[in-house]
Length: 126
Image 1 (cartoon, rainbow, N blue to C red):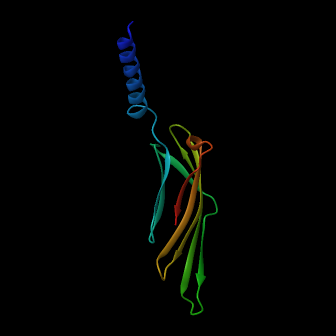
Image 2: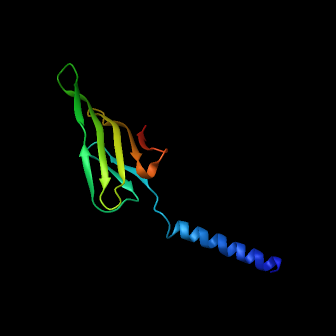
């Protein structure tokens, strides 16, 4: 085999590897947060199918100013997801805070579990 043929075979092998990992390879798993002043929701991208969601002592607490108006709202997130098809398990936890008078929203949500390994996924604002 001459150098030109070796180079061609090497390029074909690299392209085949890239195509199999990018197009038909494993999906990318990540935490996706949909949080605004009216609602919140979470998704693990890359996962499909039905899942069971358990909420573990999630709570909402309120703060009031001196006139009795709600000045702060805190939602503590603590839930587990188990996907039926592959039995992947995830834990989503964190805090969402809202000042309803100014619509100031802050949150820090972290997901851990099967496909994340030692690299937890986080949604954070600011």
